[in-house]
Length: 375
Image 1 (tube, rainbow, N blue to C red):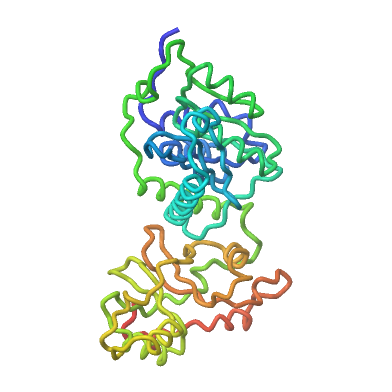
Image 2: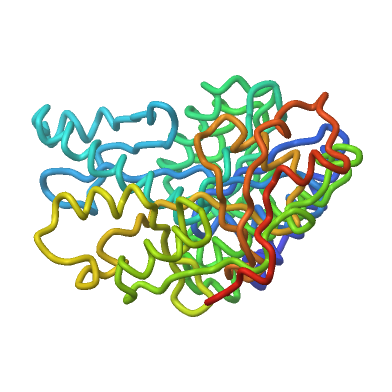
């Protein structure tokens, strides 16, 4: 039988999706290993109408070189550490080095989760059929760590899905999972890239775009909606005032006072880059020796953002933010530009509260005639 080749990762994902079609009725969750596994996983999730998430794995570098791995760290609460006993015995890293490397990679896992998914909650895996996907397997070290971490979450069934892998590695991984689908198992395996016509590097922008699109598709699915629940676009303030990073905080404070709000989005053009609150300004006023007109918004704004999409249901938003202290949340459009602001009504977290008529008015949308300096 001749060697199978894949045009690119998306094509490989479509071929895997055909082989996995029998799982559609089991409502699986699809997990992609970034970055190359995400385009493959996206096509599977699309075909199976399944939620898509990422599972982040970081190599633990050695005292010799960051490229020489002594194990892996998989995101979780807490992250799961998987050590390579042979490399540990060979290189004998100190406990201090190991602790520092774990801490460094933990920070990187958190940074990448925020980059790829923002504040979207992880898709729950317990009791679900989970399909773990990559664009191919070579040594299998990262995939082994991922399998062990997912197994700890208590899935009903765990399957691996990859376009290509060497037989020995696949056999080892199959012993850890419940099953595996692999389209190409070469007798003389070379590098994964040899089995693709186009194996160009997947960048962070593509990963983020695919995850965002998959999230929006899930939110539009009927099973994710609650009857008669409005969408964010129905209730948000479309005329949201913003400040720029180079504006001074005196202007930001004046806008907050005039609009009677405690937080403002900070935008570079239409792109949301941060938030600034009245408490940020008060703390700075007490701490800084400069007048507020000499302090730029960029110096005080928070870059840790919580946001939602304009076509999300309010049911989804209240599920994520109903228990938080947030009162105003930035709303993004499909291109991740600021579309407006949503003021939360805490009563909407109670499914028994009516959301007709006057109940919706409690969202206190700002009228367009207030939009001096509006977005």
